[in-house]
Image (cartoon, rainbow, N blue to C red; front, top):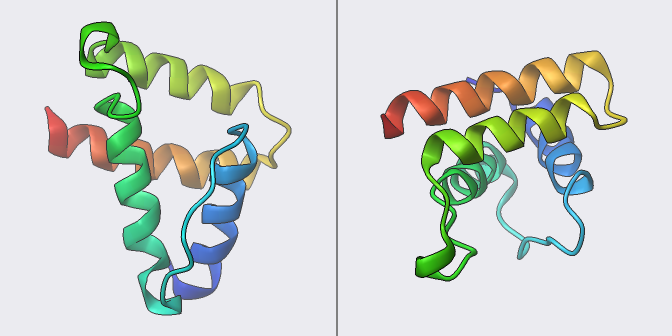
Length: 92
């Protein structure tokens, strides 16, 4: 889905819109998989205590809002939106 040279940039863009979120170093060829996994975990609200988790649709809404309000370029917002949509389609 994402070209290897832009996978690193999209991963860095994703991480830049989240405070205190980091990723362990991964192999260069697995940047796309890492981004998809981070977004899937975000949509499933896995970083929250189970009793406080929101629905996938709520998390998707808040993620899209965060993206739209970010300082990222339009191209990066568009590319990240495509990854979010792809992950959302797999979850629903």
